Length: 559
View 1: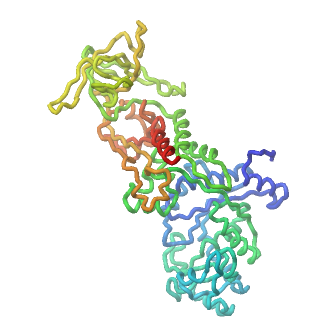
View 2 (view 1 turned 180 degrees about the vertical axis):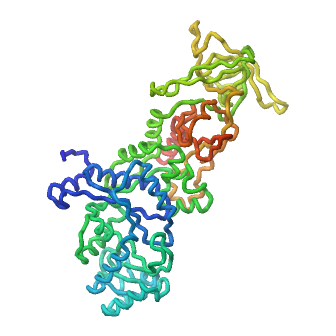
View 3 (view 1 turned 135 degrees about the vertical axis):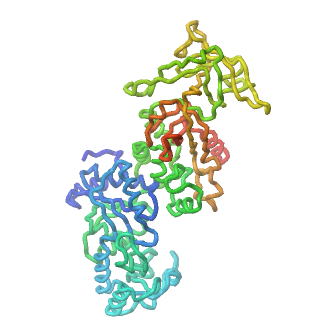
């Protein structure tokens, strides 16, 4: 391949491997999630890298489920992960499970025992932790470390046969309890767990640990480059040690920096706490950073892939601004989302000089970014709805929208002037009486007069009722992971449900899962909760970054 100084370090490693013929010019990667929850935006970086590298080099990428912990894993997550990978736009070569290799892993463990490189230990998990030592202090040998090979083979067989209770024994590698890397201090290979596995049922009651399974899975699948995030860098020596001691095919583990995103939690455990604690409405809540949540909110997969290109691949971790992701999303939706008019907080206006029996059909552009999208007809009548925020009875200087005696433009329609404000007994505004200028059809005046504002509207009698869910960032601080209790920094305005919204009638034809721009309001996505009687739309993202002012204030305070 042509040399390019902008190629990231993993590409450069593979380029060199192909020059030397290290893996016979073969590239085989894998994406290995544990099916113990839904994938989140952080996993998307690994997905794009694993599948992207394979595609770039004409190689293959497996989707492999690291299902070695039956207590935490469920078939629901297996299905959800497959859907997420497909949604992002990737196709795997083989669908694999770590549990497919349980027998091979067991046999390799027996080999390790017979070589004198593993032993059965009766210490509890707490005892093992206490004897492991620290970075400055060596660990202590287990009193069971000197068991004979014959005794270890027998005990491991009895572990497999289910003779011992959970936690009573483990199989540990015999390496070095004084090793400077704590992961090399006689790590546990197998533990006893009498639990039903989603894939193997009750066939096993001993299950491999990640450090044992990881390298063997890669070896069995003939992976060439095993791409991991940097928290596994300290685990690479044990990855290499196991494969070397077993004398089996040896892939190369390479670590890259994981994704950190502002205003976002990246811990699957904490995300599960959000779900189980009822702070959100499931894994696919549109406020969640899960791919299922982002899909339901209305993200398009190419915006995530493009964001990952912007993030890049490096060794050093940093925090990416979520505003960058949202900006890319806006750009993508601007190209594909058709425009419609919707009024979220309706205020009725009556055009007093418009015939009450007349309904006029006006032309409206579907997408100014795409001429092929064409146009549509919107009904204009005597009674309309506008946004409450588009009217002020006593406006300040810089308010240019509708006010008593002021003229504004109705989008695609006419100039109107507010003549009278109607209030109820509680002094609340319930209606505006306006007049329109028939000569300004289409939004321009033949005499050349100008107006300073254009507002959207819908016909009162022709519009339909809808529920609109205004989603915002789930957390109110840039780094919620540093808070002692993440629930204390949940944004109280992360969800605002509006039940009396009015939509132009063409929105009745929008399918579930379709992206729409509500003019002046943002990008919206039709939710699966929609019914024929009442559609539901989720706000994907506003038209502009509404957090910019707050973020500037926080930056100035930090400085």
